[in-house]
Image: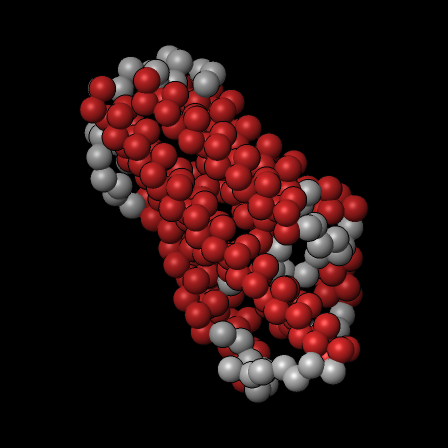
Length: 264
């Protein structure tokens, strides 16, 4: 039976809901002044924030290891994709008036450290490498007995998932736009490493733990198949970006050559 949510779990859930509230208020500010902002982005951010909140304090199906993997899938993969698709950085920059805070945020987004962290292979290493460290050492077992360590790992999984998804999708304004092939390669490599880890967990539990065979196998399957679904969704985002980029390039070439462009 899973332990009751503690202070850290409630804090993460409240923080996620506060972030959703701030996003809704910022969206409302744009709407009140007549600017366009997709309501689907609001829905996406709300769903992502709700996923993070639910993973912290809500009941999750299955025995302990399966429930943990469901939370991992929500916090580290599904919620980050929903949050990134909502373009929170773009919204913040548009909602803020021209001021020092806006300039500092834009400067931070274009800074060299952010450029380094959003280098897709590095973001993939921080994300999937952290999972290998968690499940293939005694770190996961230690989190079961130390609430603060559990909170730190929970925060890392969310932050690494956000960073990786942000680096691969690149739909918010950043200074350096990495090539589509590099981002697709990082996504493929991360997907392979994630799948191999899930298969290894199906055979052998994390060191220092002893879940039942049924719990171990179902948890590993949740990680494997759920990860595939989210990675396929990220791949779809990249495919749309490729389609738009090639369409714009074709349009430019057609205009230069004098060939009429057909509009659908």
